[in-house]
Image (cartoon, rainbow, N blue to C red; front, side):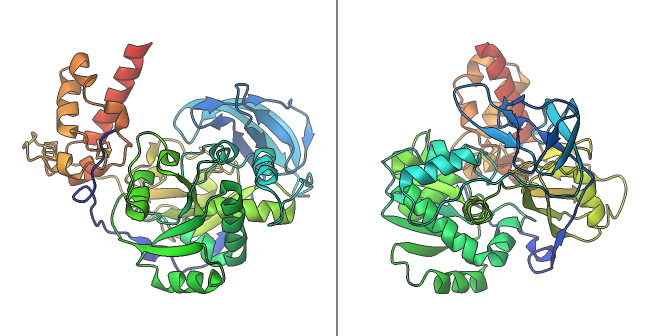
Length: 425
Ligand code: SF4
Ligand code: SF4
């Protein structure tokens, strides 16, 4: 993949003030619907209706060569296994568990800073740790390498409105410190760089104090531009290196800040990660907050806890406004990688013909030609599409954001990807 940097970044308004300082709400629910969709795969259920489960009991696992377990986030009874729309917008089995609120837990093993690289990686596998920045890649696979020179902790959180990572760090400084040190040991890297936007000056000061005795861990203040949190941009910014497919080609492993906190917390509590912090924000939510909820909580419960939409109708986006996905049902549930639910006013834009201004090309962080891809897609020119590296698009949303003609460029590129996928079949 070609990769340039510079004009492809843009300062966009963060809208983070709505949730970056207020209290974190904690909500409880009587029933959870735990999605068995894991990234592009779906796990097979391993419980039956009527089974009694504890927090941390195995309820599903992938049946391919990768071991990725799905655990129960409540204690109670399995009351149904049914197909529902998952947060990734595809239908998948969900295990519905009635919560008995007893919070009985299965005890897991734990690790410490004295544990070896292999022990930490085995522990990641045991607890089913996946990257919590959005990709959901199994952590034990990412760390099973001896080629890592630099561990990068991604605390950039560049999407507008989302503050879950930053708030999670502020509330869990010691877990963050232990988690970073555990990940550093698992990576076998010589050093660790924690990337955070310079706008969080107070938190950067606190982190510098927290890590002052750790010679090989450094906090790096990064520019407040989008998409600084994208792995390629961050690796280039911190290491001045480019890569083709994976950061390890540049000698780096990149993990999200919340992944580090989850690792340390689950180990200390000897229990599976049964809850997560989610930002509930957007221009159409009455009381934006960060919310802690059980995995499998329906998003309508989070929206209700934040006062509901200010006006109807409302558009609900899982994730941020740039890369998130619009959901049509508020029964979609929270997964370990759901960092935000944003509620917006519907906006109608008049689309104008392409001006051929080239702004989408200038700003594409993947060095694609979005305007050419949309043209080829519109003319169903599959041969042309096959030469345009459509699959290098990371769906960052920048081309739509920047387009003066209000063309839904990113959406058309998504559809072009599907056309290419069908052609392969
Ligand atoms: S930014 Fe919009 S108007 Fe400009 S070239 Fe791209 S698609 Fe056309
Ligand atoms: S959505 Fe894809 S094509 Fe558009 S700017 Fe981002 S990476 Fe480039």
